[in-house]
Length: 371
Image (cartoon, rainbow, N blue to C red; front, side, top):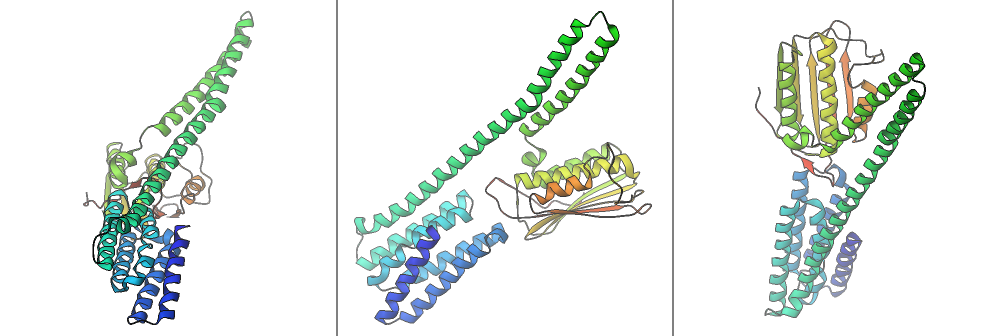
């Protein structure tokens, strides 16, 4: 809706300018058209724009709008002044909190300055109404953000409640019934032992499920150390565990698109499974893990000089994250996994995740020195 308001305001002002045919008319129309094109381009390319590109987009919008209101004669100032409201909404969507606050403050200064110049004096009623609308937009946007976070918390609580009901509660109830049956058949040792063993198996499965749920609630290494830091720690542990005689981690590239926490965690978990497979099966001497930063994506390259394998063979138990499940996990975030290997010539795994900024917290992907 704010985007529609923007185009309606700009379009109506352009139509009025053309009909008046006043001096500077075509200059103003040109700037208005460029502003509309830049605004529309940002909306069309929204999902592919990295953090830096969004800052450039916002800066271009504010510069063009400032030039526009400066060129516009006083009789038409009000029309372009009200573009400030959809611009503020776009800024709030595009930038993190601190950057958005600075940008909205710039919008406010331009508003007050232009309205004061247009009227020849500071008129609180004329100047403060659009300013109040802009900051009211900020308050509404922040309220919607809080509501979404609250809804996310409630959804997560419901998910945990379902997990507990469908797994632990059911397993414990079944174990109680088996123990009661074992107690009733205590005079038949073989039957009782069979039922007790069944309870042991069920409780072992429940313990594994409990650990999974706890793991979901515990901050991941990615959340605590960033993706680069978590991968470095993972390689340090691989070195200590004897995964390979030589384990090296590198982070290269100047681009930093950022990943939302879920996508970064998925990449880290797949890397964790890949290193587990190297430790258990590769018999490698050298393991090289490289994190590549690109403006629009993050790539992780895992290479070893081990025994390799036939990628057509299905993964057996204990082989870490299987290739199909790893690909499925990455594709939830638009990523993918490629394997280059053959028996006797080592393995290279390339993991790619696009750096689409998301509404959830963004994990920094910082460059670190070669270790």
